[in-house]
Length: 155
Image (cartoon, rainbow, N blue to C red; front, side, top):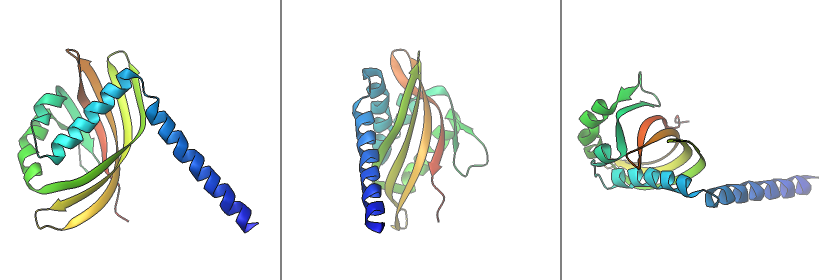
């Protein structure tokens, strides 16, 4: 009985993994465009290139990070951008897509992430988290207009 349960669990796990890979590969060209912007933002952040704020965010941007007392806006993100970039380093990251839904000029992208980072004291940690991002196509390009999420709570 135990062997059968283990076998069923292994098959279920494999099917779940294959389903995720298939859905990631089956993105339409518009969905791929949105996902490219997601990766671009993470890579620019890793590279400490804070120009992503002006390049990838809509001026009406609003966001609410996990654990924050209230939402913030574009001006706040821009104000704290340099400090945030100087206070730590992203060593590696992986984005795991859940979905990208597009209606007209609005896209909603949902994903998990895994991140290895180092703070200014050189302490390292690996964290996981999730985001739900809303992008708007303005002037022919996708820009973030809202997001919610962040690191999962520490256990």
